[in-house]
Amino acid sequence: MSHSHSHSHDHDVSHSHDDPFNGHGHSHDILDGPGSYLDREMPLIEGRDWKDRAFTIGIGGPVGSGKTALMLALCHALRDQYNIAAVTNDIFTREDAEFLTRHKALSPSRIRAIETGGCPHAAVREDISANLLALQTLQKQFTTDLLLIESGGDNLAANYSRELADFIIYVIDVAGGDKVPH
Image (cartoon, rainbow, N blue to C red):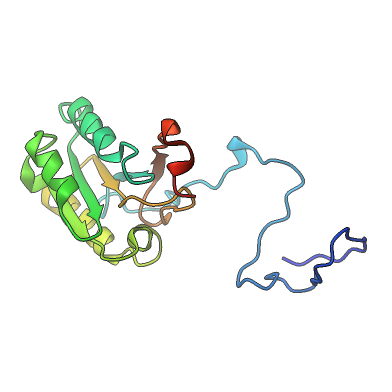
């Protein structure tokens, strides 16, 4: 979205307001205020085939913030009421899936581990194919009511694709201070 207007700037940086992408490949909506929780982008659930994939909660946050601990607590709290399965993402290991299995979050067959290699955010935002396949396979195998997916540790700017997660929880360790990746 481009807009035209005239005004002066108090800086020496030259830029055009006529470039719809402002020189960085994508556009942004123009906001006149901080935004509203009630006006936020909602998940794509209208017309969705719930038999293909149950309601999916994505859990994201930096390394060591408590994502796996939250997933364990959610599994323990919800597994007797809902038919649940879980997917974890780690860069080169299956550590989080093994942690959930050791602590009996769910039966091992209900937990899938994705090894993302390299950029953990890409597996939940850009190339979601491995995670989507794991979620759909668990859905087909167990006819789940609820699916949980944990991202590999990432920075605060990482986000889930709306095609992958219907609801997103970010875990932030406020005690981490300036050690938290931005």
